[in-house]
Image 1 (tube, rainbow, N blue to C red):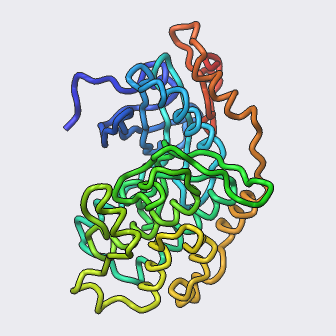
Image 2 (cartoon, rainbow, N blue to C red; image 1 turned 90 degrees about the horizontal axis):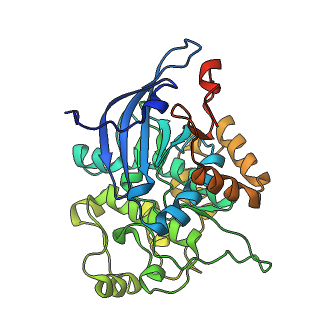
Length: 347
């Protein structure tokens, strides 16, 4: 049911071809809406999701640290299994992130509706997610909030990783060690033991742990660990989890081995995302043993990607920019096509 009183998308942004339809969801600092985009060139319209962030209602930490990081990452990512960003536009205090609309919802909704998943479908989705994570890690990006709610499904039943609110760039140290993180990020149920311990952690390894929790949940329709922080940490370190009795007998030894190696409490021993992609369970399907053209191109791009220190500075400058005209907006990421009239009011 529409929220009659709200006008979530500023009129200046709507003038660029966006039409608000209804609200889809709401988070701590943002709301997601369904919109329709029609380019001034008269091409076919497109359904988009729009994440609207009102910087007036955000915490100072989110506004100054997490939001610039998220937008800087979104300017770079381009992968078949990561949600496509169509445009990022700021108007006054509101930042509108337009992205592909996932018609089939998220993995959690799918699980609730259809129950625990079977291996053939899960094998495809696990590989797609692992490729998305590999792409990010190769690009020097960590997600830090991988969970069922942040994995969307397209009409073709392909996964689309989304919500980069906690994502950040990490650098390789001279000794090839990954830059450590100290901020507690993500959802408690998906948090690796090194996060719960409250010490600096390898965010790439914690992404892989979260993938293990996600797989467990989709097979069991339950979380692997329950309780308060100390109890959960002790269970994680003791490997005190097991598959639900009615599920265990239906799962292959190969997928059980994969999840065991992902839920390894020692991050130095835990599998990397590259090891996930060549595990016995995934290569059982011959179709999944090689990259298609889009997957290959994305990985090749990630391997040569170089982040410039000016990227974050440019995003921060645009976030701080004050529009001087009533009709003007600040474009952080341009639309694929813009008409002459729209371009005249962009800053």
